[in-house]
Every structure is written in structure tokens, then in C-alpha cells.
Image (cartoon, rainbow, N blue to C red):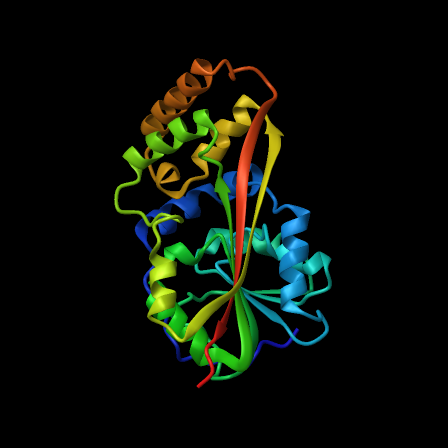
Length: 266
């Protein structure tokens, strides 16, 4: 698969330490513990992306390939932008000729101006300097190009997951948060507008070990030393025990949100 107009002189933006260290150490746990995307959400997104035969999709922050696999299974060729080496190594394990993984960031894409038709940011845009990322998206996109943003959120309307979220909030430090509102504010300051959005509520059955792994897959938890991670395990067990959920199976609820962005005319 030929890359879209690579410009090798562009330099990556810095990666937040929590992502660099945490995902560097926990790529395997991330691949194992993070959920897929619901089929209805993936179908909605590819409907917005259009014909798979009409050029590649650039996926920003592709990670271990959770959404990449959804695109490939529906016929798309993907240029997977991923700055963390361990994540790119997991992408390589997909063994797909339809995926080209490159070392780059959302704020500094290695593509020429007006050379990209479609960008997807899957579970990733909150790690970027969003205003810079949108400026870069505007630079590389064709005039009729579009951006799709998608996240799998833990469903904090579920009481035990609200407790889990409070615990994680205490440990987050200065790591970016996927629901911190930065991308919505950045849209207002950009040339883009949200033209469509959709939400899906769903759940996956898992085990106690699966919940512990899911918590350990969070970047700033993965970046802790092992003693601290074991303490987080204990706190997670106590939360589950308080809701009588310490026996398998455990239902883990998610909310998936997706948005389509297009540049305003003129």
C-alpha cells in the first residue's frame, strides 16, 4: 500500500509521559483488556467514511489496532499513525497488508497539504494538543475531506463504575482526560464543525481479572511501579466487593460516542 504523499521532514510533537511510559509498558494488557467497538458504531462510522475503494483512511492514534481491525474487515486500507513503539509493534502483529503503521503524531502528520481524504481518531484525540491537531487536519485534508472521532467510554452512570472513575480521577495527575471538553472547545476555535454524532450504550461480560486488567490498561496506572499497581488492584477489588460483583462474570458497561467533523466552507 502506497503511503499518501509522505513528507519525511516533519518532526513528531512530544508525547505525554503517561502515554509514552504507560502504553509503552502495557501494550499487551491494552490489547487484551480494552473492548472492541460495537458493530452498530463501526457500521455508522464506515457509512460516513464512504466507499472503501476510494483511497486510504488515516487513523490517528491507532494504538494496538482496536478500530483498525474494524476498518480493515470492512475493506479499507489504513495508514495507522501511532507514536508509541510498543503499540506499533502490536499493530504489526495484525499481519495485514492493508495496514501501514507509521511513527507520527496528530499535531505533525507526515503528509502533503490536501492529500488526505479521511481521518479517524480512535480513542486518542485527548492525548493531542487538540488545537494544533485540528490545524494539521485542516492542512492535510482535501477540501471535501472529513474527520471522525470515536471513543469507548466507561459508563459512569453505573454506580460501581462511578466509584471506579472517582478512584482513577485521584490517580490521574496531569494526564489528559477523554471527557475533559478540550476537543469541543477546540472545534469552536477551528475551521471545523460537527455535522453528525451518535451514541451507543452497550456492555461486555468479563471477569474479575478482566476488570483488573482494564484498570491496568489505563496509561497513568500502567506507568506506576508494580507496588502501586497492586494497591490499585486492591482498591478495585474493594469497589467490586462493595457491590457484590467480585464473582465472575462481571458486566462492564460502555458508552461509545462518535462524531463527524467537516471544514466550514471558505
